[in-house]
Amino acid sequence: MSNEKQSGKMWSGRFREPLDGDFEQWQRSIVFDWRLLPHEVAASKAHVSALFAADIIAAEEAIQIREALDSIAAAHASDAGKELVRDHPTAEDIHHFVELALVERVGSLGLKLHTGRSRNEQIATDLRLYVRAQIDLVVDSLAAWASALLQQARASADSVMPSYTHMQRAEPVLVAHWLLAYIEMILRDVDRLRSCAQRLNECPLGSGAVAGATLALDRNIAARELGFAAPTANSIDATSDRDFILEYLHALTFVGLHLSRFAEEITLFATAEFGFIVLPEAFSTGSSAMPQKKNPDLTELIRAKIGRIHGAAQAVTMQLKGLPLAYNKDMQETQEPAFAVEFVPPMLKLVARFTAAIQFNRQRMAEAAQSGYLNAMAAATYLVHKGVPFRTAHEKIGNAVRFALQEGVELRDLTINELRAFGPEFDEDFFPAITLNATLDCHDVIGGTARKRVHEALEAASERIAAISREAAHAGA
Image (tube, rainbow, N blue to C red; front, side, top):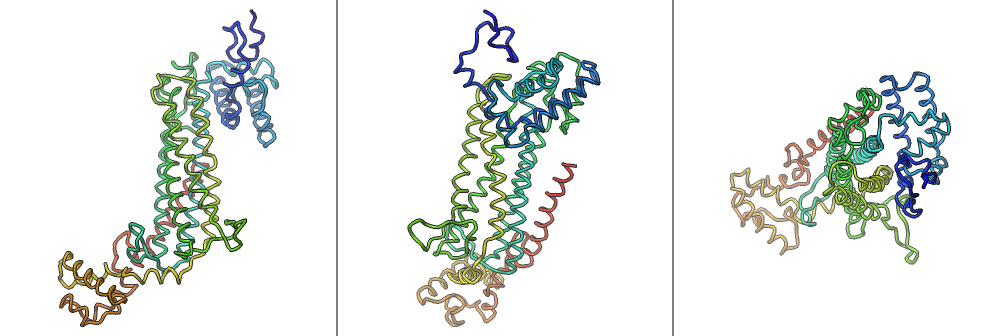
């Protein structure tokens, strides 16, 4: 039987029987890998440069192919063009699509492009380019969120709020100190993502199907043209490695965890029971039944959507475990989980705008920070400065708190005589030592909530956030 029904395939020569129609549609990846077209074009142009340097194609041929590749990219850059790629009736994958489109433009010359390469190395290269670009988008969006948090932290000045452990009020902190905690998380997220980008930044082109290219290609040419640090060191690993996808997804799980914790706190703090935050109406919705409601839909959806990231990471883990070297068709299934988290950068942009629009009920937060004996730690520290061992100081202040609870007053409302019932060390200087500012400023250590330390931390965070943008601009230059 002839293989006419297989014509146009990239592998048709060996086959006599046509593919089962349902199987053919089922195994196609063009329905999701269409988004790799810009990266496939870029990698193909880099391969053209390597072929030309190896005297496989002539200068005029290289020019024709490169111009045709640019034409393909331009023709499908719009939403309508992307749909044409996705809905192509015969292309198996993005590599096949570009080859078909190239042949349409330059005829049989387009068939020369696949000289010296394999789809195994093509997809490995395209995916590295894709993940690298996505990391840049996520980092940029994280910087926007960090900037919004910094803006709110600066605007909060010396406003205070209670901190919590075990979801019970613990000690007063500056609102800026609480916001800076999320900036620290974001900065770690950026470091993780950039570390991932550094490890994936090697070029698989020239690895062939598994054993390396059969032509004497200078692999450094393609690596340089695509902005990779170097060619990959081992062809077997290069064509079968998807660690970078899994590492990217795991880095995003941390981003998701931090987003979800923020969303949870905002949701709680916006309740009437807390009353610390006024939700911006532009990011809230109402109830179809209860006219008074203003619901925190953005933060609730964030909490829910984070599950997609964790699901994607778990899916890729299960797809890769136990795979023999090198390329296996199973690896096609690592693509959709990577594409499934494209919602993260736009979600982060929304969170940044939401964060900038939040209003704080500073009076309610200050009242909460000055009730419930949140100055007890400062009170114990006062006794430590009087020479009392901390364990003993802790016991004395605990007894004083129990007495104040019975009397229905705060520590500051107790008299000297009442306090001296718990120890002779108490004197009139006790009361200045447990004021709100003194309670804050006794945490005068690096990373503490003392006012001067937080002001210093704001400046340091500002510089670190600015450095992200500077490094991004340098990388793109």
